[in-house]
Image (cartoon, rainbow, N blue to C red; front, side, top):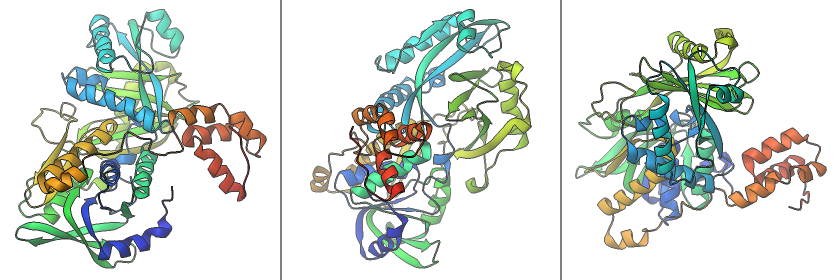
Length: 468
């Protein structure tokens, strides 16, 4: 599936003269999901992104696909069920991007939630997944817990639970979703900014855009317009519509990364912070360990968000409580990154209690705003948004014509669960035909499935025959 910056100028030329069914502003996971959903229905779709695709919140996540075990405490059962259902879908449509991962959740004498109550939560988590998790939960006593994770703090340890969720490559999931939308006929362009709107009879009829590379201006026309701006949603609303009422409660989340040799976690670990009722994850990912995340109110330009010293100190303090023998210091940190969650203001008393539910606001001025939500449920969120837009803004005939989407099929037709498993089993065979070492081939197959062969062929610039 071709998806190249070399086609950028042609795409912009096409946008200048075309009339689209929908035009999407925002090239993160929400915009990408809606572009793929709409294009799979046969709709004519355009998408613009002011910066690079996935350059905002969509590449600053915890890299997790999960039901959200902590949402059970907030009694958000519907949100957990949706997320666990979508987790199963993502295993099927993106097996090279979404991988099962075991999580260990230790319980201590002074923990806010004891072993019994936590056990009920674990059973509920399995029930809400309809027992379709990669592996059901386990209950471990203190001895077994320390055998599973020897570097864990042992003092006052009551035991632990081990359960399944998943990790993912967040920015690549965006790119692969956009590539799929492109193959379905969507026109997608980065570094194009929506500057203002053209109104007729109090309806948005066009968006005035600026090419951030050439500085040329052009007009994008469509039957309907969608904002998928994430933390920039309120800024977009103010720029494109008059008398916009803010809807977001932006929240900053930061992560730090460590060399896996410095904190060698055999599986992911869940660290509860009883003081502010938050959860911090320690996540093995390739050669790194990701620690995060924080959750604090944020105001200002989302582009300027960064990890502050107090954010880093907060995470190090929590990690040191669970792994005191590691003696982690600031100089052990390889890097940090920060992002802004586009949470929708729901009147919650704290940032962490603010719901992760998404909202779809159909403004009567011919523009829909999609905000909030979880990475895990992006496909479902996109489906619901497009269905609502069709119902509210398109004719009965068009609703019937565009009724069915095709987003349950693999994002990359070359990578299905079956072919991904076959590629995994063929690493040694691939090695025989290349000069790459086995570790490099394994990484390529893990991240690209069967398409790893195409990448190797491209590298050698000649055809190499592989039999799988």
